[in-house]
Amino acid sequence: MAEAERSWRPKFATSDDDFSPIPWERLLREPPARDWMVERCFLRGTVGMISGDGKIGKSLICQQLATSAVLGVPWLGLTVKPGRALYMACEDDENELNHRQRAINRHLGVVMEDVLDAGLDLRDRVARDNALMFLKRPEWKMTRTSLMDKLVTVCRRDGVQYVIIDTATKTFRGNQNDEVQVDDFITELRRLAIAIQGLVLLTKHPSVTGRALGTGESGSVAWNNSVRSRLYMHESKNAGLALTGMASNYGRKLDAVPLRWERGVFERVEAPAPRDYSEPGGYD
Image 1 (tube, rainbow, N blue to C red):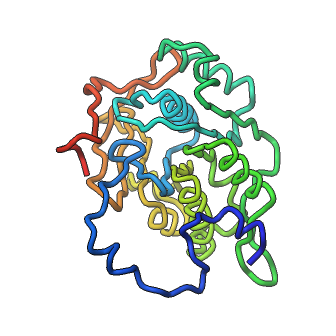
Image 2: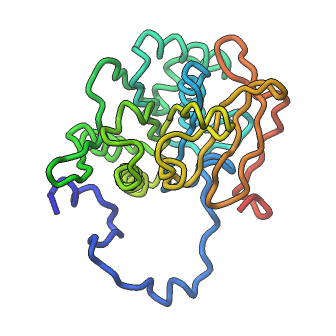
Image 3: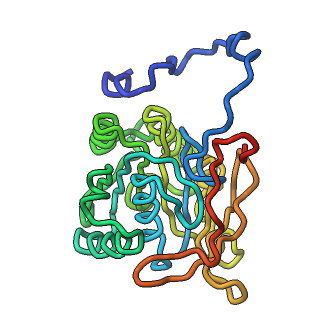
């Protein structure tokens, strides 16, 4: 195993060829409650996805999530655990990120210094090589790039717990219809999520078929199956713009969250009062 690979794996991880069982004493103990980074959406130590058409607003809604995370305030009416956030913007430049952030700050009643001091890290990656993994020939194996190593180093050094990668298309340099290649990519992101004890969130565009069927899927089924949860941002003739849970491995899928655009940000229509899900009787 390469030194760079070994250096950032979580301390509790074993080698890839280890096949030992989970110790009995750990299985006999009651497991801790599921640790939701974003209420009923994304768990700590997992990879999630937000899919949606181009220009529908995925980037803005993700930047709003990153801001909510560093401030520890609700996102679209959903409880968010506080944590430093890195937003890797592959399609929007510094000026656009600045414009959006000012609208988000105004909506939340904060100033730029507040969010920067809290740990918001915006990365302008427009018109750069953003591949995090590529298909290496002739081994025909997905391999990490130096940029992936840099991302891991920054996240561990700065204590980042929310990593938002916008988009899958810009960072995955393989065949999106190949299940093994897609799964290798998501597995590497999962290792990062475990190492930082946080969340890695990926954005993706749906295929024409996925859009027509209302699923928001595209490429190999591994995109949907390998991530632990997926939200779909879409617009319908009957319900309007909404964010809907399409896949969740650890709980009931998120019901459609109706959205409206107001003064540069998305707001939840009739958002409920936030609940503290760490208290007894909360969602598990």
